[in-house]
Length: 566
Image (cartoon, rainbow, N blue to C red; front, side, top):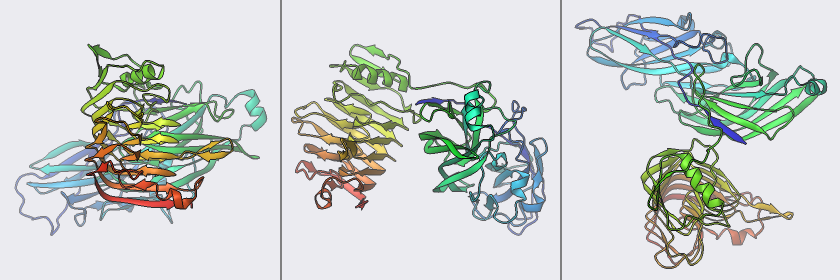
């Protein structure tokens, strides 16, 4: 699967002019100077053509005014329900008379007329006292543009007349599917033209409008409905026909979801497309496209953050050879790291070299191929220099990690939000080293918010492996010399495996010392067990999944162990 990421500006902005008068016991009435506040809400230029996400459906604007830092609105300063303002031409105007010398928070929410006027259970419910938005997904249909909506929290300090622009942004990711075989004669002959799509995925049901955080992730299904009509697919519309469009409430930072698109006609489902770990981000658009009616395996994923500027296309992490000074490679991008992985995995172990990470690097959840395989181990040191690698996603069989297999050191590096999946020898930093490698070591590494998942392999009709899983490293055998996993920290992470799992290392028989694990869940999934549970249950540890006498002076804080599937 190819994945393409595009970057740019947000979809919709709104400028709001605030005009309402307020006399309230919470505000002193001795006013000096002019406290008239004008806020203007409008959309930026460049979004004048009809398209999903152009903001034209969000025509009803509500807001509430708060004393800065408060989550309770000032009495009489909430405009909602029948009093909500109309955004004409994506612009609304309000005038507020506020007190000079004070600061205020104003929360704005814009939604469609049909959503705003919905009876019974509303799709969106704003609780202004507490600043909470609740999203209802019951009986939600695919391809509903009326679900588009926007918000912002705007803070002002009043020291005389105020006139400011306010930008509203959607809290959703827009997820689109397009197919290049929609109008093929063989397809229309076999399936007809009256098609529908449904989408199963994960999303959140609650948004804190004050701090932008989401809560309560659930799995939902956008029920089958007819294909989008009168719309062009966002990417190469001359090639791809629109199959599906839906809005998902997601975090502000990049995250991933699984997507299952079902295409059906009157006779039933004709094809299902499964996309594992599709990247989504608030106010960004994710496009999945290919021959989706005739193939379920070959597709592309593209993230497009703005709707009115050219895309930046990155189909995959393309290897770019880094600069080398003497024996040291200077790494400043994911592409340069990909060159290191490609070179090592093709048989050049870079013996005697040093790999210096000289910038923070964000993988954006593009699939990462580990450096080093079971056949070729990396023989170069990696110096992190205090930098951070963010949003790494790995799905591999064995020797799984940022470095899959190495004989040398990895140190002074932070990993944020990694997701790592495999079957054998699995860790965020290193999967495997070899017996008798005294030059090996992992030192001063921090990993936060990691998800490590290790499942058994189905081999020759029976399950095997599914073991040696840790946040720092999978398997650390008796290396000898000064080899050690030393002074590493793991926080807020989860390790799921069949056996041999720990917060730091899944199975370590050599020095593991000075490490700290905090708020880590260790989950043994016995669903496909091939050892008696009474034996397997002993193969875990707060720090080391193997009870080694060389695991000393480590700290575990709130590390829990649970067993499922037995």
